[in-house]
Length: 108
Image 1: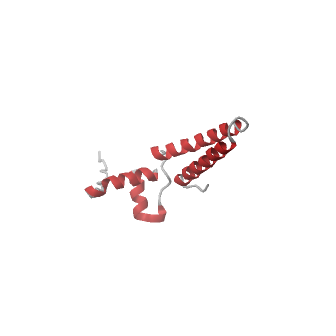
Image 2: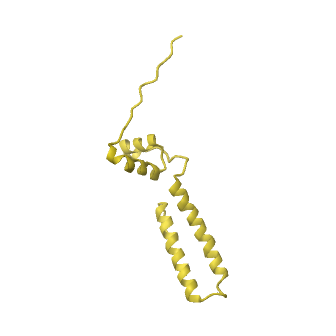
Image 3: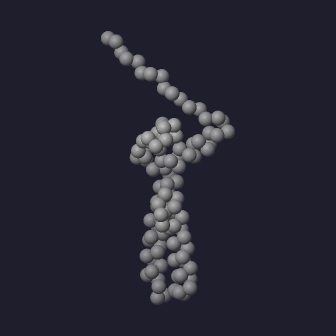
């Protein structure tokens, strides 16, 4: 029986001083290494985003959900606490929410 051999893979080794930056960019993109390199080489013909979510992106999404819960708790304290402190806390939560949305690539 004749078996077809697979083609040799194309590999990329970034220069030593750029390896950490390369790994960070791949992680931030949410793509596999292969998909990231394909997108970098072929530009707008990039593949779909990977199904996995990078850990930092997942953490930001979790923080965004937590800010919503904290905001609801603050609203529940409206009659019992100092109005100035509540206003400051609500403003801080809005800033955190805006930063989280920006990190996720969304508009606040």
